Image (cartoon, rainbow, N blue to C red; front, side):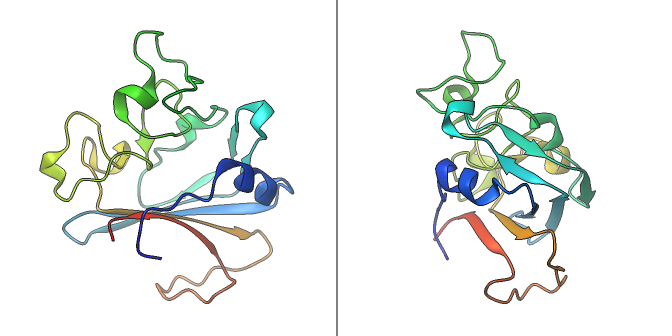
Length: 169
């Protein structure tokens, strides 16, 4: 897959409903540096629960920018489910739908910029604890069953992981 793609929250809810998934996030900057974050559990609630995010323990080298969103509801331009002041909904202010809490520490669905210097304040694909106000080149979210063992190689066999990818074509 070499384009922007989001599976949809209804699918993520159905897929994660058995409470047995591990989430792995791979990040890449424009200088070809890579970082990884993995969460021991990943569940997305139903639409009636505003797609509430539940994640487990963190491990990785990206410095954790997602646990602060744990328990948050998915916000979009037309559905403010974050805890930001009424004047400044996170999805409108920073772009993209995401599990915003009080807006940040991450937004992997932000606007894509071909150059990180083009992005304005925290508008872009952000993983704040790794690179701060820097719009990333690429992010990949992958899930696997907790019963499967992940190989640390970059070549992933079909069926081992389900990729949720965001990158420029």
